[in-house]
Each structure stands twice: as structure tokens, then as C-alpha cells.
Image (cartoon, rainbow, N blue to C red; front, side, top):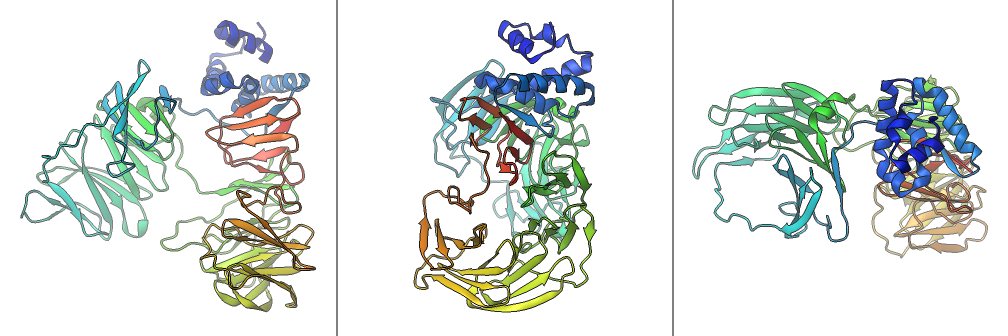
Length: 585
């Protein structure tokens, strides 16, 4: 049996998958491909046209499978049907032992806290002060039986003491009985701590953050002497701890999910979920819409690296360059141009000016941690000759190249215009509106400020072009995530988000158009404003991304959520946080 995709489809249909895998050259490769198939089995079972595209994504870049990968891609292309070609690998990490989804008659609505009763039985319950739902899901995960049952009434006679109290920032105190003095639990100097009992009730678990969020800690504390018996130090604040059987899983703000197993710490290949550890410490349960059970030993075996802060994916306006994590890539092939080294440390208060990131055709601009610049074609760092400082109250706007930058301080009437990468102040423009948001035309020729339901447009030399909108209309304060006003690509119109919709004005005559009801931040369907999308394809998000080729009806699902962005020069090239692909067909 050849190791073709056609033979694989036949083998899966006849239960001879092992014979197909035997055609691969060695055991390690067979295991890798088997894990790839297992990871997406539910997906390609539901969407059969997804099998080849999923397998290619899982095996992209695996050197030992390079010739086989090329053969599979050639086979898919020869079929004459739509398929999805990866330009980046979607790795297979740890696989759950079992998973349970919400369904008709087994709704998870209002439930989000997993809790083991025994190693084999798991409950999904509501938050103590949550949705008010008085039911829970009981799952015998080993044999697949799940049911909904009433939540038993709380124990009204539960002991009030001992209890934990806190003054806010700082240590947590233990009060052993009514009228007893507060006893401070161990806490780093100038740090802050929370406390809970271990799952077996024999020890205290104290966790939290060091001063100025510089790191985090977990202490296992003797309840009588309050002596620290074991200590774990991590690089970022600890937000929660779950334990069982002497093992712990620790959630952190920046260092990933930490398994503290047999005295050693491991970064586990699972994200931030509601989480539980079984009584023996053998299993971990996670919930993020789907309830999953994992082997803790397998999670440790698949240990990953701590997450490194990077850039969200985006194409430059020409489609020639693509930013992804800490890499600058060619926008069409996905090949690396340069490895970047941005400074992306946490903010104790506030944040960077917005937008904090812009990839122009000439300059890549990051305002996180101070103004950082790179040459967009090569990825080489650029130095400002004029030092510029901005705060979280500032709003920035850029031209297509990234060589012009405008800055507006919230509710001020002056907009400064700078040249990049030099940083030289070109001029300060006076507006009549005390602006809340700022936009710039692609060619840098015009600027727009927005205040409420009004916009004011001026040329880069300061000449008034037009004021539009209603001064008397009450629309409330702009939200931090509200999109900035923008010019159409031809520069003849300007659009601003007002309330729950968009207002679009022509600059020549001032005519107004309203776009309401779910138009979104990208003004989809509005000519000369809408972001590029692949023609002939419909894309739906969710736990997986489903691509439907409209002409043929071919439906392909990929095991990633999106949100997808598309190359402006060739929208068939799509990227999300996890994957870069080309829609073929």
C-alpha cells in the first residue's frame, strides 16, 4: 500500500490505517504522522475534504518528511479541487485523553469550573457567585458517560473558621477562631499574596506576586508553625494554583502554565484555562468551552518553552512583508527576512500610545516600551536621531510607508507631524475640535481628528478640508478598543466609528452615509474601505476555522480559531496567530 493520500483515505475507511503507516520509513515518522492524524480526527471526520490540508499543516517543515510532504501537496493539486497549502507548521503538542463538548441535552451554559471527584469522575460546575445555574455536569470520562444532575444545596453549617483575610495589596492573614489575632502568612517584602488550603486540607498554599509584578511565587506552608516547607519562584505573577496528589499546576500571567511536579517545574503545553488536578495527581482537567482530561506525565513529557512576547500577525499595505511573532517574513512565501528583538516588557500602569504597532512599506513602528523602529524591507533596527516620548493619552497615525507619523494628545487641539525614522518635527497643526482619535491618509496628505460624532479634516499643511457630523449628538465616551477614523483608499471619503455604527462622509460635498448593524471594524462591504478578502471563499470562525469554496461547495476545516488576515496583494494568502496558508483552487 503506497503512502499516498488516496491510499490513506481508503485505509481510514476500511480500518487499515496501521498498514498505511507502515509504508513510512521509520518508527519516529510513523508516530509523528499518527499523532497528526489523531489530533484532527474529529475535524476531518466531520469535514472529509480537510484531511490532506490538515496533514500538510501538521507536517510542514519536518525534514524527514520533506519528500513525502511534496508528494502529498502535488497529489492534492492534481485532483483539481480546492485545498489549503500551508506556509508554516501547525505543531502537534500533547493530546488529551478524553474531551467532552456541550451538546443538546448536555449544555455547559453557565458552567465553567472543573473539579475531580475521583480520578475517573469529573464535575463541571458554576462559579460560587456565577450564573445562578443550579445544575452541574458529571462526566465518567474513562467510559464516556456524561449527565446533568442537580447541584446539591450548600452546607449551611460549614465552619466559618479558620478563614483568610486581606487588606488588599500585601500579605494574607490567617484567623483561626472568632476573636483570635490575625497571623500573617509568608509573603515576600513589598509583595502581595493570596492563600488557600491544599486539596487534602493538610497544608496551606500561599501564592502571588513580588513587588512591582517582577515575579511570582508559590509557598507550601505548615498550618501550625506557618513555616515554608516548599517554595516555587517564577518569572511573573501567579494568578491561581490547583493541586492533587502532591502535584501542582500553577497559572501565571506571562510565564505560561507551570507544572510543579516532584519538586521540579515544567512549562506545560496548555494555555490559560479553568483547571483541576485529580486526587492522585495523575490527571489534569481543563475547560475553555470544551472539557478535556490530560495525562500530567504526558504534559510534562511534552514540556514547552516559556511564552515569549511577540507581535501579532499583520501584512504591510503592499503585501510584500509579513510580521509574525518576532519574525519579519516575505509576504507571499512566508520565508524569513529577519529575526527581530523588540522590547515588550509589561506595564505597571497604563500602556503604550495607540496604535502600538504599525507595519508600513518602509518602516516598522512599535510604541510598546518606547518608540522602536525597523527598516521594513530588511528588518534592520533604525535609530531615532530626535528623541520622542509619548504616553497612553496619545493617539498616533501613520501614512502607508510609515515614514510620516502624527500624534494627538487626548482632548487637545494640536496635532504634531513627524518624519520617520529621523523623528524630526515637521510642524504642529491646529484643529478646532479637541480630538479623541486621529487618522492619516495613505499618502500622508491629510489628517482627520474625531470628537464624538464630529470629524475635522485638514491637509498636512494645516488647511481646512471639511468639518462633518453633529456637535449636538450625544454618543458617549470612545472606548479604548474603538477603531480610529480612516480615509478611503482613494482619499475622497472619511469614515468614523460613532456609537455602534460607522459614518462615512464625502470630502467634496460632505454627504453622509451611515453603516449600521454588524459592519465591524473593517467596514466589510463598503467599497474602498473594506479589508481584502479571498474572492470565492467564505470563512467562518469558531473553535475551528471553516473555509467554503463557493463555486464547488468544497468545505475545509482547520484546527485554529483565526482571526484571519489576508495579503492585500493576494488575499488567497491568509494568516492567523497559529498558521499561514494559501487557499488553492
